[in-house]
Image (cartoon, rainbow over the protein chains, first blue to last red):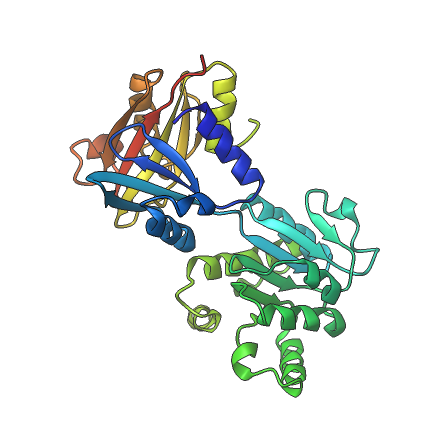
Amino acid sequence: MNKEILERIVSLKKKKEPFCLVSKVNSTDTFVITIEDSDKSDLNKSINKALKEDKLILVESNNEDWIINPFNPPPKLIIVGAVHVAQSLALIAENLDFEVIIVDPREAFAEQERFPNNKVICAWPEDAFNELVLDSRTAVVTLTHEPNLDDIALKRSLESECFYIGALGSKKTHKKRIERFLDNNISHEDILKINGPIGLPINAQTPGEIAISIMSEIISCLRNQKYTMEELRENWNNR
Amino acid sequence: METNDPIESALLWLNNGHNVAIATVVKTWGSAPRKAGSQLAIRDDGLMVGSVSGGCVEGDVVSNALEIIGKPTIKLLQYGITNDKAWEVGLACGGDIKIRIESLESNE
């Protein structure tokens, strides 16, 4: 490994392009391989697997042991509702290397100054979500308490591959949300994918505490992807 | 410190004329504090950024890195309860980890 390799890594990270750092276990031979390059590599399958599972793998190829260390772009957190909890949540998520995007059509809330380090989109969720890519490394959180803002964002998230969907609101609010969604022909199965009331049950009181409860739930879903959101929730409730 | 990213730090240090090594967790058994792929960058004066454990073995990894820093080579280390150095630098959690240190070509 040398300076050129380090520069390439830093530049790919900035461009948010996934890649693997591929090294021989027993020598200094190290290569940076992107998905595009991987077609040409004997280690193609392993590279794709490492990126997909976001997990380092060791493989043997041509009598050499190789380390395939995946570098995926940071996970994304889309927050609908530029409210007080959103400010705390954005700070925590940033610290965990999430890319944070705030959506709110209300100008008084969607102030860049309130979210100095984040992308703030001042638009209705239905318009904003047309511009956003919701992939398997995306979490969506709705915090407005306004059905006309939250519901559309939740519906669009249910149609996507995102790994986490959470909606702020009491049990009563969530019950009403479920009734609205059922009336709109959204299946029970889909509704169960929404984490509501949002967050792990730590009896959070302040905006900062609520943000920690939400972020903990997001991390749990990110790191336990073999379980459904419903299974994880059951587990928390039983503790 | 300007960044807490080991790779970015390593590049910054190289550009400032330092010699640098990068340690990577390549394998873990049992309950290890940091998952495989985690990295620690080490500068020739002992400064480090990142982690390969919960702070249990970093000290020893840095001393090993300083032994090879400046000449491009690698060193493989293993820590755990089976290690004869367990009393000194073992993992309290009872796991095992294998670490590869790569000393980088210097900038000149």
